[in-house]
Amino acid sequence: MANRQRAAKRLIFREEMEGGNFMKPISIIGVLLIIAGIAALILGEVSFTRRETVVQVGDAKLEAQTKDTYPIPPIASIAAIAAGVVLVVVGYRKR
Image (tube, one colour):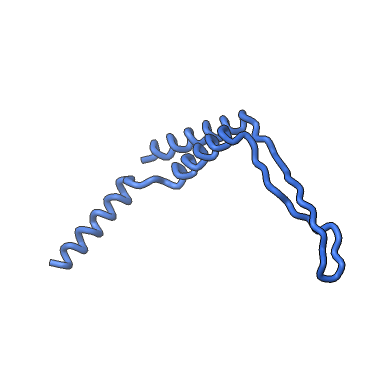
């Protein structure tokens, strides 16, 4: 009985793999591009704080913090979304 259940599970798994009941890597990349494009449209910029050591004497050191901000052009966000849609469509068409 247990052997039949294992054989049935292997058969189901094989059918899923061959039948395409899973996302292909190209579709996953497409979905990630769509998510990144939407996030970039919503946020509009990426900013981060950088620490630099200005002076160091022995164990004592003086650090400066600088905040860098890089704007994300809306056209780049739209291009990422469009490329993601194309990859998802191509991934599903290759079934």
